Image (cartoon, rainbow, N blue to C red; front, side):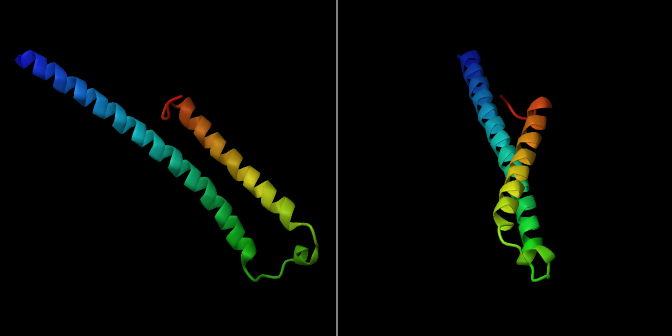
Length: 92
């Protein structure tokens, strides 16, 4: 009976370790996403200041700029995520 109890405890510990690893992977993905969003926020904050730029008078610049910065940050997120999978920090 004692061996059966030890085997059950080992099984429960393995299940808990698996859940803990999945939570750590989720936390890593969310941290990578928040880093990419922080970069985009930094760029938006710099351009949101009241500094006179020459392109402020040009119409139609804001939309393509926001789209390109968003695409660059999405690419940054995917690159870091791919690196994490390549190093086997994140499961497939």
